Length: 235
Image (cartoon, rainbow, N blue to C red; front, side, top):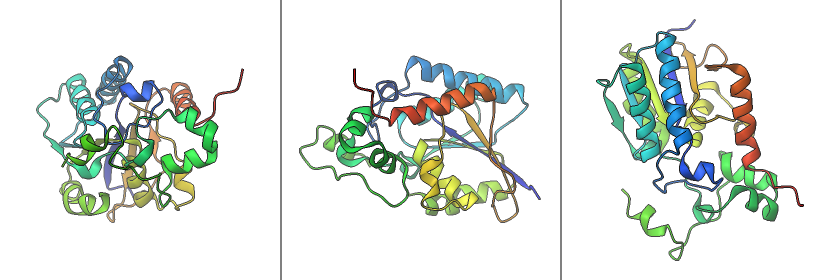
């Protein structure tokens, strides 16, 4: 029986999403399309009558900016926004800044898919000579934060939005829906599409996750994300 509602949101398209580059902890802002995605998401949530009591984000600009734009479009700018590095995107190591399609051509699509999405396969490590090493390591993971910070808010009856990243949202889905290490790599979350989870008293999903909005557009957005990790056909 459904007792709580939780909303997950992968941030709107970032500048490096648009360029199909691994972004990770590099602090990129939203692209113009990402700004529109966030605004449209907020408009949809307002039209469907949803209201939030608290929003959690990572400390990366694209996550925070998405939350602000969503709340603005909903007319709920007063809702508190709590930021934590524990909701940051996965660290992509030496892949940061590289083009996904080019890496798929070199290493194969399956390997790139595992680097992007798997639960227990790590990307190649970053070294001190990497151009983004200092930006990342001069910056100040997930289930302890969920259990200690987010869960108490939900159990108090508050409606929570988590505006985060593809892999941090997938990690929460894995936990809440009991998805296996193997199957989680096949879960695709498009940017700017809110995901509604209905949870029981033990905070386990009782219904399939719902991606809210026009389903044809959502399927097109899912395909766009999946195609990012595929090698470009040779010409």
